[in-house]
Image 1 (cartoon, rainbow, N blue to C red):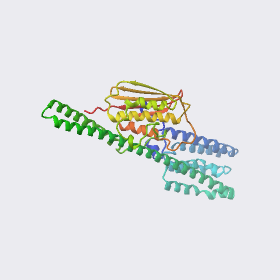
Image 2: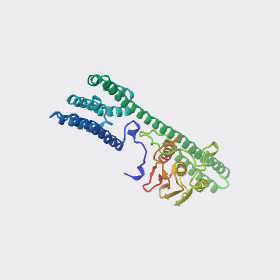
Image 3: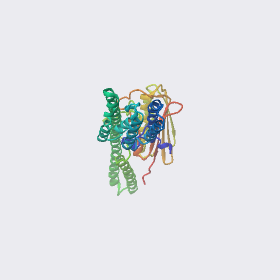
Image 4: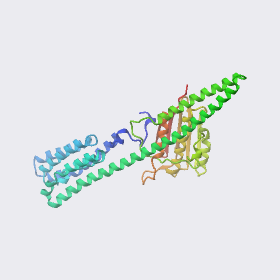
Length: 403
């Protein structure tokens, strides 16, 4: 896989619909299967002592449950039915195993189904899991009934909580993308408006000197042509930002803020932020006590305004995330390389990335905004902690020359 497409923390389309990535599903299977084998498997071995042929059959049923959990994220209803039936069979073979323990795998699947499927489907599954409750009363009386119903209800509630948490995170990500797109639209609008204003002035000048100085008029007309092509290119990028998306937006990892002195007030919504002002941006960060080293390769002059602006904003957001989230960071390196038809932007700090603790309000919008800007110009962005410490943000932005 191309390293530019590896984006830690970014959600895939399935995850946005409540499903898990392959790695997460595998981890869930290993954990739930391990729990079933450890708890139910041990209970079966202890309760099956002296039962002759029943023990191997019960052990085989436990293994079937553990294997069925492999598909609980893809087909939770089917897996729930399999685990419920095999669990009841285990309980029928070895009544010494509690009904709650025999249906442990089914309860785990109920939790996953409750988290990943619509509420109506999860309520039906909950009702189906309550049907064996009279067996719990028959085996353990009121206490057995209460324990069984309580564990089933807790499994369903835990899944509901997890699903609500995921839905809230997806809503925050979508809101961050919408806000970033609105901000991009304002900036591209200003770029296009500035270009059109210049074209109007040049057209008036060409009309004034058309008869007396035709060569000067031709130069003005060529400038108008260049400006019109540039404006058309910027408008294409603006339309790309609002095209329908089939995939889900990125998972939250950063925070959308601006570097001190680089706010988005009404007075700042004008053409201006670009790689040519990168040193000014670095100076504002240096004023906080951070060491900022800027390295340039290639000439940034003549880049399309949208690409220039996207590169500047990505550096700005990366520096802000360093100030806010990189514990112990005292140095950050910024590299901007213009190589052929591509602009590469890399920001690396030497801090310690926070691994735990409550997320601050608005957390996740920084990286979402950077990825949205990179996507707008047809580029890609990757971000994540480095093996030797520190955090890296790297973007690759193609340069579309307007012909």
